[in-house]
Image (cartoon, rainbow, N blue to C red):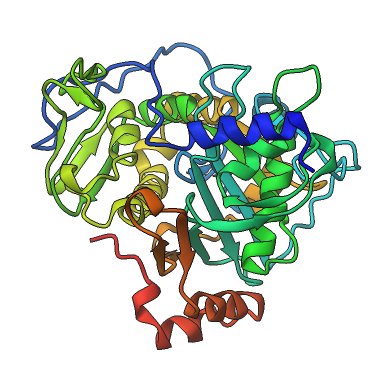
Length: 416
């Protein structure tokens, strides 16, 4: 029999899982409809010598959906310990896998491939509300450490969620994004996102056949805006015009509909073509998922847009505008650290960054997993993956993804 506490949790998640959860707050940047490419202010305080001065090719930044991992260059790093203390000191650390490897072990620097890294984006409303996994991505890096594959796990994927004693969860079936909420419950305390991550990781492993994650990260979407703005915004190609469900052209939240569900008032518009997005625009764009707003394939379209934006951020982070500007780069690094909770199972985030130094944006392959809905209308229960997805996971485990993608080009998500 399910415990009363677990039953309350199931009811709460069932309510929270309906519709989109609109985050509030965040700065408003350039006002107006997103149309012609425009510049965002790129000034910073000067006159203070940066710790980065004199370091050749010293840093590149890779952000995963908001999601953020720093990839530092392979050149000899001047002042490595200073870098470590400055950046790692701002990165949140937690035991995301239940093995007490959040930093208690002696630090290793021999990160080797292949690697599987679980990246989860959350948009916490308050400290008392159990977190839902709003975005679930897996970054797979082959043994060579010179390329990467990113695939999204549909947050509505209907799966078996294993028993989890820490939270008093007896196990069951449901949408995969709820696993984080079920696992986050702590008796007599506020929910714990890191503890919820542990159950989510176990659930993703069971659903995909991935035996072990080598690292994991929780990314706070509120901090995501700050990262984009610290970079001066991001240029990306928008595949088709999309209207915002949640934001007005000036970035303010649309007013609720007094006569029913949804919102009223003018909508921000993201036009087809090459565009420049600041923080709130980027976060708003990658959240859109309704056909009525220009996303005909719903959540699968949202996943694709998220992945496209990740790749655009990687490219922007590699640009001379970021890597040759010590003030801007330092600002980006600190914003990233403040938005990230990382666990490298004994290795630091900087160790992983150095290990992944050879990856370039053109070597990042975006993957779409084929799926379909279970039930329709009021009978909708969630999503399921098509049988061919099992072949993809087998190829991933056997390091045969390139050969698989040659036979199944439909798995490639295009950036244009």
